[in-house]
Length: 143
Image (cartoon, rainbow, N blue to C red):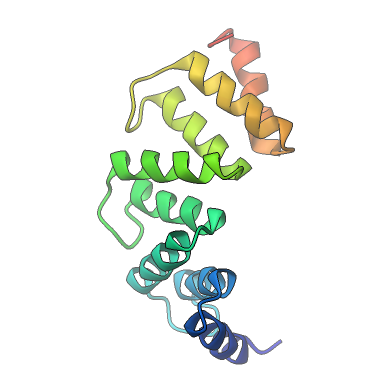
Protein backbone atom coordinates (compact mmCIF):
# COMPACT_ATOMS: atom_id res chain seq x y z
CA UNK A 1 0.00 0.00 0.00
CA UNK A 2 1.38 3.38 -1.01
CA UNK A 3 -1.24 6.10 -0.53
CA UNK A 4 1.13 8.92 -1.52
CA UNK A 5 1.90 7.25 -4.86
CA UNK A 6 -1.83 6.68 -5.40
CA UNK A 7 -2.48 10.40 -4.81
CA UNK A 8 0.22 11.33 -7.33
CA UNK A 9 -1.30 9.03 -9.93
CA UNK A 10 -4.88 10.14 -9.21
CA UNK A 11 -3.68 13.73 -9.66
CA UNK A 12 -2.02 12.86 -12.96
CA UNK A 13 -5.15 11.14 -14.27
CA UNK A 14 -7.36 13.97 -12.96
CA UNK A 15 -5.17 16.46 -14.81
CA UNK A 16 -5.90 14.42 -17.93
CA UNK A 17 -9.63 14.87 -17.31
CA UNK A 18 -10.48 11.49 -15.76
CA UNK A 19 -13.63 11.99 -13.64
CA UNK A 20 -13.13 8.83 -11.56
CA UNK A 21 -9.59 9.84 -10.65
CA UNK A 22 -10.81 13.31 -9.72
CA UNK A 23 -13.43 11.74 -7.45
CA UNK A 24 -10.87 9.41 -5.83
CA UNK A 25 -8.51 12.35 -5.31
CA UNK A 26 -11.34 14.22 -3.57
CA UNK A 27 -11.84 11.26 -1.25
CA UNK A 28 -8.11 11.30 -0.44
CA UNK A 29 -8.31 14.97 0.55
CA UNK A 30 -11.53 14.53 2.50
CA UNK A 31 -10.19 11.70 4.65
CA UNK A 32 -6.46 12.43 4.59
CA UNK A 33 -5.39 9.37 2.60
CA UNK A 34 -1.88 10.06 1.34
CA UNK A 35 -2.33 13.82 1.83
CA UNK A 36 -3.31 16.12 4.67
CA UNK A 37 -7.05 16.52 5.21
CA UNK A 38 -8.31 19.46 3.15
CA UNK A 39 -12.09 19.49 2.96
CA UNK A 40 -12.25 22.64 0.82
CA UNK A 41 -9.98 20.97 -1.74
CA UNK A 42 -12.17 17.85 -1.56
CA UNK A 43 -15.26 19.94 -2.35
CA UNK A 44 -13.49 21.57 -5.32
CA UNK A 45 -12.54 18.16 -6.66
CA UNK A 46 -16.00 16.68 -6.08
CA UNK A 47 -17.38 19.63 -8.06
CA UNK A 48 -14.93 19.03 -10.93
CA UNK A 49 -15.86 15.35 -11.09
CA UNK A 50 -19.58 16.14 -10.77
CA UNK A 51 -19.27 18.62 -13.64
CA UNK A 52 -17.98 15.70 -15.71
CA UNK A 53 -21.09 13.68 -14.89
CA UNK A 54 -19.66 11.49 -12.10
CA UNK A 55 -22.73 10.44 -10.08
CA UNK A 56 -20.86 9.38 -6.92
CA UNK A 57 -19.03 12.72 -6.86
CA UNK A 58 -22.35 14.51 -7.24
CA UNK A 59 -23.75 12.54 -4.30
CA UNK A 60 -20.66 13.28 -2.19
CA UNK A 61 -20.85 16.98 -3.07
CA UNK A 62 -24.51 17.01 -2.03
CA UNK A 63 -23.53 15.45 1.30
CA UNK A 64 -20.96 18.19 1.82
CA UNK A 65 -23.65 20.83 1.28
CA UNK A 66 -26.12 19.01 3.51
CA UNK A 67 -23.76 18.75 6.46
CA UNK A 68 -21.44 21.72 5.94
CA UNK A 69 -18.42 19.54 5.23
CA UNK A 70 -15.93 21.94 3.58
CA UNK A 71 -18.68 24.38 2.55
CA UNK A 72 -21.52 26.23 4.23
CA UNK A 73 -24.70 24.24 4.71
CA UNK A 74 -27.01 24.78 1.74
CA UNK A 75 -29.89 22.32 1.76
CA UNK A 76 -31.44 23.59 -1.45
CA UNK A 77 -28.15 22.92 -3.25
CA UNK A 78 -27.84 19.53 -1.53
CA UNK A 79 -31.32 18.48 -2.68
CA UNK A 80 -30.60 19.68 -6.22
CA UNK A 81 -27.39 17.65 -6.32
CA UNK A 82 -28.97 14.55 -4.76
CA UNK A 83 -31.68 14.76 -7.43
CA UNK A 84 -29.07 15.09 -10.18
CA UNK A 85 -27.15 12.04 -8.93
CA UNK A 86 -30.38 10.08 -8.40
CA UNK A 87 -31.40 10.87 -11.98
CA UNK A 88 -28.13 9.25 -13.05
CA UNK A 89 -29.12 6.08 -11.20
CA UNK A 90 -27.03 6.51 -8.03
CA UNK A 91 -28.83 4.46 -5.37
CA UNK A 92 -27.12 6.20 -2.45
CA UNK A 93 -28.19 9.61 -3.71
CA UNK A 94 -31.73 8.32 -4.20
CA UNK A 95 -31.75 7.13 -0.58
CA UNK A 96 -30.32 10.46 0.61
CA UNK A 97 -32.92 12.40 -1.38
CA UNK A 98 -35.66 10.22 0.09
CA UNK A 99 -34.40 11.08 3.58
CA UNK A 100 -34.60 14.79 2.75
CA UNK A 101 -38.28 14.32 1.83
CA UNK A 102 -38.80 12.16 4.91
CA UNK A 103 -37.57 14.79 7.37
CA UNK A 104 -38.29 17.93 5.33
CA UNK A 105 -34.69 19.06 4.96
CA UNK A 106 -34.40 21.40 1.96
CA UNK A 107 -37.84 20.35 0.74
CA UNK A 108 -41.29 20.04 2.28
CA UNK A 109 -42.00 16.81 4.08
CA UNK A 110 -43.52 14.38 1.59
CA UNK A 111 -43.76 10.86 2.96
CA UNK A 112 -45.19 9.43 -0.25
CA UNK A 113 -42.26 10.82 -2.25
CA UNK A 114 -39.84 9.50 0.38
CA UNK A 115 -41.34 6.01 0.08
CA UNK A 116 -41.22 6.17 -3.73
CA UNK A 117 -37.53 7.11 -3.62
CA UNK A 118 -36.67 4.56 -0.93
CA UNK A 119 -38.31 1.93 -3.15
CA UNK A 120 -36.26 3.02 -6.18
CA UNK A 121 -33.03 2.80 -4.20
CA UNK A 122 -34.05 -0.50 -2.59
CA UNK A 123 -34.77 -1.93 -6.04
CA UNK A 124 -31.14 -1.13 -6.90
CA UNK A 125 -29.96 -3.15 -3.90
CA UNK A 126 -29.31 -0.31 -1.45
CA UNK A 127 -29.53 -1.92 2.00
CA UNK A 128 -30.06 1.37 3.85
CA UNK A 129 -32.97 2.29 1.60
CA UNK A 130 -34.46 -1.16 2.09
CA UNK A 131 -34.26 -0.65 5.86
CA UNK A 132 -35.75 2.85 5.60
CA UNK A 133 -38.56 1.53 3.42
CA UNK A 134 -39.26 -1.21 5.96
CA UNK A 135 -39.47 1.43 8.70
CA UNK A 136 -42.00 3.40 6.63
CA UNK A 137 -44.17 0.30 6.28
CA UNK A 138 -43.69 -0.61 9.93
CA UNK A 139 -44.69 2.89 11.06
CA UNK A 140 -47.38 3.40 8.39
CA UNK A 141 -45.67 6.49 6.98
CA UNK A 142 -46.20 7.33 3.32
CA UNK A 143 -47.64 3.92 2.47
